Length: 150
Image 1 (tube, rainbow, N blue to C red):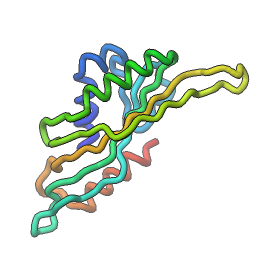
Image 2: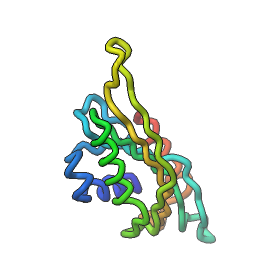
Image 3: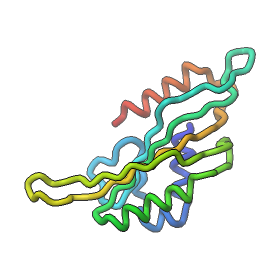
């Protein structure tokens, strides 16, 4: 559902694709080679429903973690993700807005040196569910399933 939309937006962006290629993952990248992006969806809010209880409008928190072995590439990737998603409107997404960024250096304890860099970019995404017949319970269940796959 909305996760597939986010994947398609990131993958179809020339700047993001130019850095990570196909290495865009929901929730967990496993042992994938850097640079890469991992996106997570959380904190679903139902903004409105129809009289029959079906959802009309929702918003969700989107976090895109940008991983790279170099600081500059990590920053470039995060900037590309922000440029790609901030103020995005298309399909059933009627607004995606940059909220914050959080940089981290991951240190290898054995080497006492930085192993890689992470820049997590957070957005608020407003969307309309793709299926008019989907219920609140069904979308919450899908978000929980997607989140628990990590």
